[in-house]
Image 1 (tube, rainbow, N blue to C red):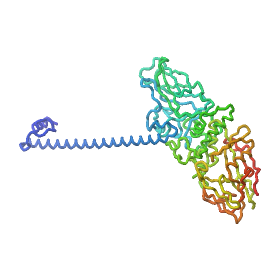
Image 2: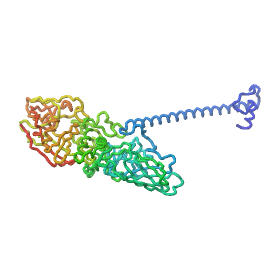
Image 3: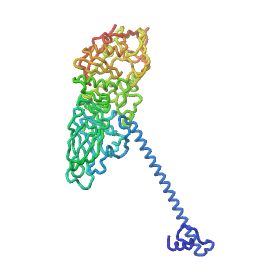
Length: 587
């Protein structure tokens, strides 16, 4: 306010305070004083009006800011809570981080050397079960910082690495026969360098792995490589959800200060995974290959997490309880198969933000939806792990690949009816022809069509209404010397004995798992075959096509191995090494 106006306000109000009450009556004003009064009153009103509007605008903006902050915080908390609740197998008390925040345990407050990055020298990294292709960075459980890749970062600055995208902790895998090797990055945070290179040591929080002491540098950021002195889990399987390594440094060799710690989920396999038997193609078909190579990381080989987690969780602690290798292998496979017995398999991170589909309520499905008789899909173990739908070949592969990931060979046993094996002459003779086999349980109505009994629960993996008759089927076997034992992952059923002859094994399997082998003869007085419970369609069981072809039926319910051809395959090979087609084709 000008001096003139200040003087005027002093005369008018008896004070230079513009908020004071008038000390004189405006009716006493005249001439110049009145004009000044009116002019200054307008100016004051304008000033007050502007000030009030500014206050109101500030209040509005502040309310908006507070509201936006509240909404953002609520959204972040919701995402964090949702992700944290969904993250299976992790410490539920640990919060999921949605932005650039710290991971793992921080250094001591007085520390001037801090741990910032850790890269483990792994043979295989781990990727999500639903990884789409080899350049799908978000689905590979590896972290990026300045163009290099790590298994732990104190700060994840790449948005594609936030723990709403990739899990905390990041999973890693080593064989029990491996010593753990890693490279740690540490940083001197003080402007005053060490007077001499500090000593650095690692302590396994579980006091299992031991490491030697290494030398650091006096200033700046530097890398130090460590290798464990021992193999504490040698010849045993382990799963450690929070594998924590504590890093400390010392300037004098006596007083140690914590520089931080890294935390990872550790899968310790029994032996080196038999990765050479994993299926791969040249040129690669990235959506079905099991040899998964991260193209962005120099083709680093990866294993999908569920293949490791089923084996390491189910068979934890096993591997050296007996003196015979084959007996230890059998114990491991029996433990792994417990995952299949309830007929509801869920993937490692089912129901979390790390998988695109949530199959928590259903589990992986056998002859369900896309894999049903009327469905259409690309068959393969990758399809099963990604989409949750498959048939016997893929469920058998799942069990075999879990075994291979532990360094154990499991094999394939495929059997067929005469029609399924292509053994029936053309044209089909007017006789009772070995056509299909029925999975338990059906009611036999010979010479009328059989009737499938209603389920009392899941008849097969994730499905109470699977297709329940077939022209062919495959399950897994484990060979102990010259003898075999069967595991049928599709139905959660395994044998209890070993057999020297495949025919004997098939006899026990068919007795335990099948209702009968159906011989059918075309006859105008017969009945068509109805797949009532699964697809609801009529089928010609001699041509595997649709249609209401009338048949008369004869069902063989004992010694069914006499009517079933079979082939044996090693691990994942598509070339059989043995076959037997000496079966009864017609009656």
